[in-house]
Amino acid sequence: MIIAVDGPAGAGKSTVAKIVAKKLNINYIDTGAMYRAVTYKCLANNIDINDEVSVINIAKNSIIDFKDNNIYLDGKILADEIRTMEVSNNVSNVAKIKEVRYLMVDIQREIGKRSSVILDGRDIGSYVFPNADYKFYLVATPEERGLRRYKELTEKGYDVNLDEIIKDIIKRDEIDSNREFAPLVKSDDAIEIDTTGKSIDEVVDLIYEVL
Ligand code: DC
Image 1 (cartoon, protein in one colour):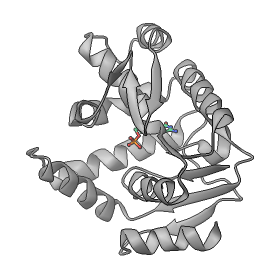
Image 2 (image 1 turned 90 degrees about the vertical axis):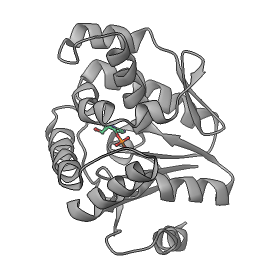
Image 3 (image 1 turned 180 degrees about the vertical axis):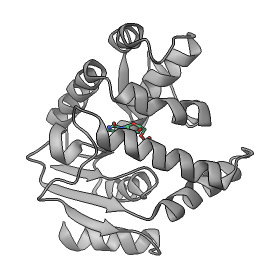
Image 4 (image 1 turned 30 degrees about the vertical axis):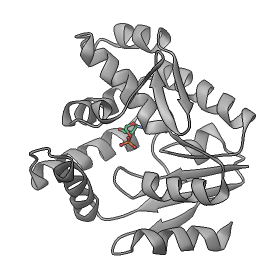
């Protein structure tokens, strides 16, 4: 079984997808983490994100995998280092590179062949798994999405500014939605859920009603 959960940054996709995965006892794949892993590796190696050839080279020479719902880059588990503002502000420019996407999508499809899985991302229902069993598209206002990210980051001890986060989120949505190849888009057969003002449990229940 394949469940696709797409939508813009901060719409609640990963929180909800993790809970549904646990309840159904299936794997959860955070596809955004894959693009973040490539971005993180580029930054760590002082690669200019605008230098597409070098970024593609990094992506080609990376081993990205998931074990127990954790992402591994070249055999090492990744956690908070892929959630920094620096990675967040650069990842859309890495994710818009077609060759990088081909590589990540191959891994995602391979995982989908091996097991039942719920994936969260931007193009899962529209491009990676157009025949997914279930497709959801989560949205929320930029203000609410910004506030969620703000809380997440401040709880982790980061010193961040809410207005800047909202601005960054809007900018990221713009790049993700307007890129040429496999952009952020709701596929016609996806069920849209507006998570603004809804609790995590309410959103999980809405998804559960459909499954
Ligand atoms: O969900 P996230 O914020 O961790 O995603 C990070 C970036 O990766 C975001 O700019 C969109 C991009 N992305 C993508 O292009 N396709 C996906 N399937 C998942 C994420």
